Amino acid sequence: MSINEADQFDVDPRVIAEAASAADQLAEQVRRDGDAVAWTTLEAGLDQYEDETGASADELLPADAPRLAFAGLDRAKEYARKVLCNRKDEVRGPIEAGIMGGSPALIAALFGVLSLPVVALPVVVAIAGVLMVRGLDGMCKSAGGS
Image 1: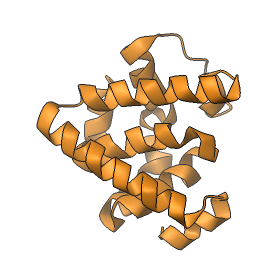
Image 2: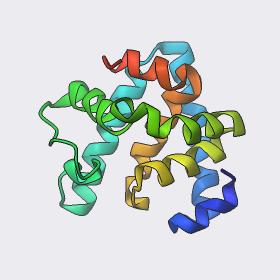
Image 3: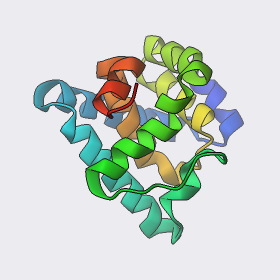
């Protein structure tokens, strides 16, 4: 998926570029300090989504996924398991193509695969940061999924 394909998800290419830069920085932190930094960032992104929208982070889950049951870092890991790890067969192609295409392509792929609104940008950046370092299988292992 290219940066231009982000248009079909109503994401401005400049937003994709800024998010890609933030994801690159987060990936460097993950490489240096470990996965916990990504899970902390994801939890902060879920909190920010709730603060900005007044809605629950459960709205960011696939329609058939059960509601989030945990809090804190456990909630971040649970979210990752529900949106990506439990759907690996479905998302592997676009996610791996995004990783191979670099952070802008990965950000665009995540918006498409997860069907997230732009207000969820911090969530996408956090997931991209860990995916760029660990890949899909490694991220799922870190999140406690299969």
